[in-house]
Image 1 (cartoon, rainbow, N blue to C red):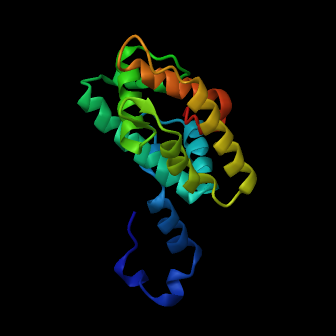
Image 2 (image 1 turned 120 degrees about the vertical axis):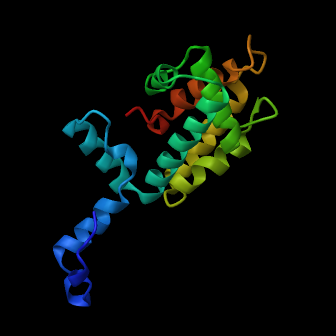
Length: 174
């Protein structure tokens, strides 16, 4: 939404309408569902207003997942599986593995606890307790992830299963 030209005075900019329009325009596109749903919209706004870094990370992950979707020649139906819990079907697992590689959680076909911490630290760096929790998650997954999986994409299932087991708050289900 745009403000009319006559509304560009400093006094008007401090009023409710221009401030609200700026906030509205900064909302991530994901809070506006293809099929209108007020509940979905409200959940999306709550996520994005909770922590601006989380909103940016979420938007980036969705964009990267779309890029991975194209890379593995997946369909919309394949990406819909990611709203649920792992294990995912093969194409969805390939999307996840690609995504984990792009963000550094998987390197050289192995889980990287350093990559995991580099990815989640911006989300929790202000909260020492959460940061310690994420360190524990990274250590647990380093011990538990099975790198000898049946197919290359199944590593995506292994890593996400472990992360969601110890840190379900990292699952963006909506």
